[in-house]
Length: 280
Image (cartoon, rainbow, N blue to C red; front, side, top):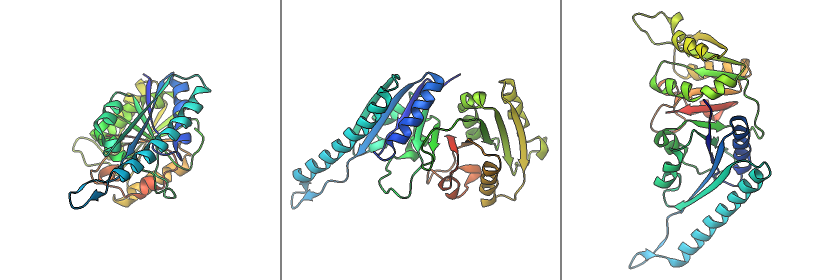
């Protein structure tokens, strides 16, 4: 199994070089095709009273601005990928729906992996609707911390496991990374009560399945009492073990960062220190 079609979310000129570089590294590793996607969202158009028709001048200004940014993002993507001779294409969309548009989602649903940048609080123009991508595309998303500019080798992987459908989806969606890694740790935090299983056995079945794939896997179980301490336990594990990739299921419906184990706070991904693969 390998990722053969990778979608790179090129939502701004600021993060287009970073995401292009990561997509290129993955394409070389897995011999994959890259689709660079930029979806420009047109802002609301002022209306002219009293007939409330769109202001033609405002429409033209908005379209020109969108076309300018689209051209810049395409230039960055094409220049970087052309030097490496990779199989690539670039698709651009301009609409009021942006990354929520049907055309963008149709493209996303036909790929193996989506690569996107973590929101940088220093840049207010980070606009990609990542929540929609995660919940509507049905594809795994690899989030790249904005603090990491160059693709690191993925040697150590942490799988956050709670036995849910989302966690299972994320684990199996990440198999190409797990099989290529030197070591994989399945971390079970506050395992749920199950009549026929002790806490010590939580996660043992998924660990055994991964081992049959030839993965060097270990199992760790921790009890914290739940709540925000779940996120803290995972963050501590990431720091202690120098993890390169975190794999976890996507949860929640209000915001894209409210995911883990029934609702860990936004700080989990705001303080992202490693690549993070999410599946829904």
